[in-house]
Image (cartoon, rainbow, N blue to C red; front, side, top):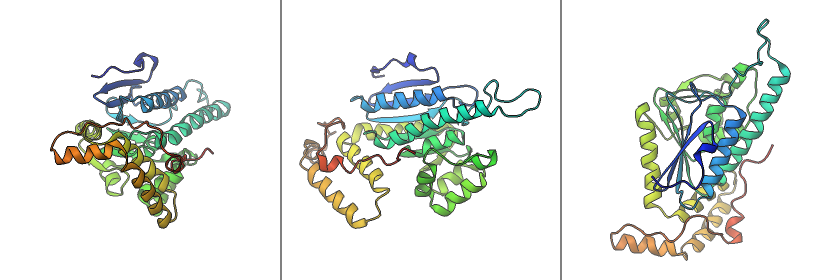
Length: 299
């Protein structure tokens, strides 16, 4: 294990480990890893810290036990009147406001991290717990995981950027079906419709995510990974193919002049592991940086 440049004890709901450039963040709130505002704040904080750490090449987020995340914790004391079962509207409004602010920040921040984020959805994920994975770069999911965007079935509406993110992952028609019905699907269907890259037996999800992260950490240029990730997110909202290809040409013209490009070619020709010169956090030229504006706007 590599020494962390942060104190894991500062987080109540998370476990963090770093192994040779691969950071693993585990949501750990038994029994279902439900979200409270402090958990969301912790996730945002640890992602920002790991994203800025030059020793971190990839981040994997997963859940402890059989669940990934069951969404907002609706068991909060005082939320329901014990006599009538009615919802305390003031407390519900505060709870929603706290969740909205904290999760919005995460979904805005993840695309801008210089390192990839892989969601290892090891078990069921519902509502906000599933939405949390949409801003990850790659998703692997357990075959038998039960997932749903159940907001309309709770009298609530979509938020946290899901109406922007979900159609880009699965297409408008499929996104509409999932959002308007709130129906439950399993991991196999999630992979089939493109919501996840792969569906695997539950026990294999985290190992597969870590193996993928290890490939990124060991074999790929940190600078090239950062540029490719951020350019892909930037172009998710670019309507012009011509502008996208022009942007790519400008970036390629720049990156081929960087030391990692020469090292990548030399190591390939010499049949040896590459010794990358970058850490992925280098300052980029203004014309490159201008492409990487926040994708998920504040709302």
